Image (cartoon, rainbow, N blue to C red):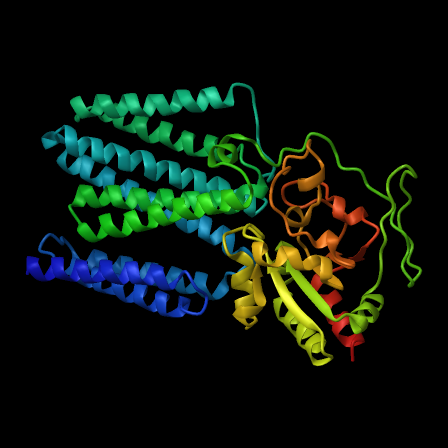
Length: 470
């Protein structure tokens, strides 16, 4: 029986590896999902055949409750809330690993030696940091707390002190496994450390944070695999951990920043309130609030005016952002693109690696609307084409199209690669207001002479554009 279980674990591990390989491309991603799900099913069944299972009734109860919760989340959670859900799932993964470590500690406390105790302690450390850090990320994304960095004096020093304290407690427990107070102290300090390392990270870095926390959850799972002597947990946890680290590094490279800068730089901190420029009235004659005359003027327009420009355009690039996700406008955007293509206009989508609130957020939304994969162009491939583009349509994107990343050395995003929409002949920006994005940084693009701001709900605005194109 043991040989059959180990062979099943090997087969499951191969399925995970191939699944990750297929997930690297949108076209093969469904196949990757099926392979990964099949591998997990094999791993679960093989584990249930293990003679060490104590109560199948408890396991069945967990399966029923977990399946019910998963079904509700899969059907009720909106695509706009997917980043928050991913953050929570990362936290649940960390909690599960920490519970495995705690259960093993109290089960074998009297017989523990240094090596298993160190493994348990590391599982607790990584698992609790993942849990509380993910809860903070969820709160920021859900706007239960402010998205800007929370900074206070000696913050990094306190984090370092807590980290050293956890290492000291792990060392102490290695020699004194029966020290229950030290175990609970490790749980408490690890929980505080998870909170403190995430609160100074701004909203603009949330995609990197989610990816990094996902990596932590994988490392915690691998550590729990060593506790249980379970090969498939070790392999799958290592895959998740390494994939998360690689993705985090790639996203940092896309922002021209280091991982340490993301973790300790306090990106997105707002030191001054953004200026509110006057807005010129569109052809509809709508009145705008009076503001200081010294501020630069913003050109505004209507969906009907935008449609007139679209009728003359030979090339259009659509730049989706979180505003499109909030308005759930992806299907409407696809309808507009199809109308433009029917009149002979070339339409493509420019995708920035960190647009949205999680890795691949825009790709997921557009795939949901059945936008062809070959029309989703990465930043590096499309940036040189903006100069020859008649119209760039920016839907709720902020920092990823902000020219300040190139022109303002004082900007927190200075040096970050952006989509150069400002080089287009005309830029249309769909936003509800002039309010800065989640990172709290004012956007120079809104004041460019070739930019036309169109205020309102993105979905309604795009629908009016498409109607006017008839």
